[in-house]
Length: 243
Image (cartoon, rainbow, N blue to C red; front, side, top):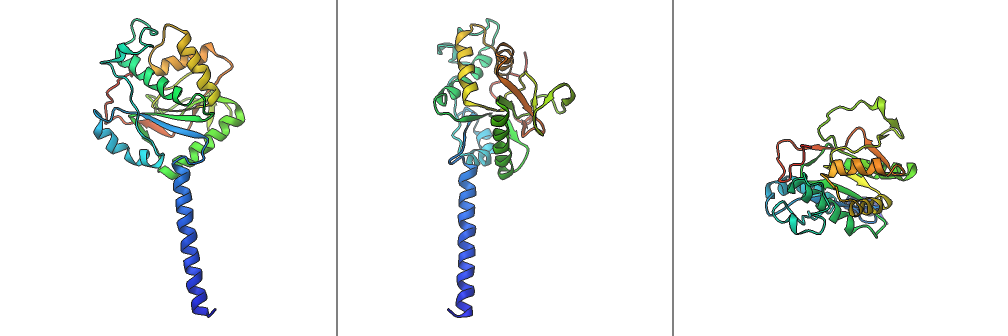
């Protein structure tokens, strides 16, 4: 092989390796062979502007938005009567959408990354994917059942009152807003049992809060710094910000 041929071969080999690396990285971000599946609650027929804005996130994690009931038809769902009487239909529907997505994966042994339609990533997709991988790794090492990833309504958090488990996980024993969280397979099972057992379910964040209080063997954490925040320029169809 001549020097020129050798150089040409080397360039092709490098280019081929780069392409393979890109494809592998894309598959990794999209969840191929991963320990988790991503779900995003969004009514695509009524929130099309939201879908367009979320497209990079949907594409990166291979998410098909899901939506099962809204405030107009939630009364038809079997769980409708298993809520506090004062719970609004919009609150009931959001909780039921969370629960229905979790039920899809309860027997798969996978973590679930759950997102609401107002979840706004705080970093680029490849970095976000790596941070989610790291968070799940730490959750497994520390036996954490659920980790809240979003800022919700709190831009800053006093971490001194919480137990620091890792560099990013703080054991709080309480919930945070549910625009983004990761839940383990075992926690999915326990939470679904809880939801179906009680008759006073409420909006998702408070439901998780009561669940954690009544299930002390489940470790609940906040991830700080957070990976998501609520997109305040967009008002989701399901407003569960008031309690």
